[in-house]
Amino acid sequence: MKKYLVLLATAACATSADVATTETTSAVLRPTRVIATDPTVADITRAECARAQACGAVISRGIYRDADYCETTVNRAVRDELLTDRCAYIDRAGAAKCLDTIRHESCAEMNFTEHVPTACTHDALCR
Image (cartoon, rainbow, N blue to C red; front, side):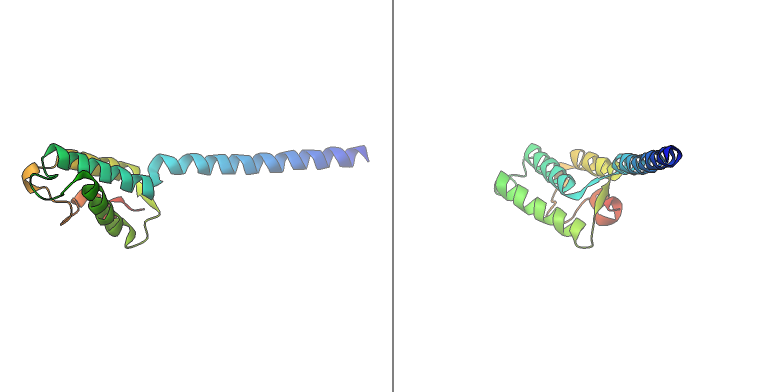
């Protein structure tokens, strides 16, 4: 009877250790390469509207009539671009490149409502 209990306890410990290791490993690998779509859409929207504000595109150039309009318009454009085809996760490196592209975008050619920078397209970001 004692021998049976020891074997049963040993088997239970081995099984739970295997499961925990598998879960931990998979949970650690995914976040290092991809990030969630919704927070990335918000980051792109904020970056584009901050750039528009810095370039004077809000109000003075008439691209965006105010900051709220900028956020609404850009957010819709980004969502349309990324969520037209299912985009479960965003490539972390791609998101960084997209945000960097926006920050260095030429004020003379800025108009996010007409085109999404190539670095911010579905093909460049979605995984």
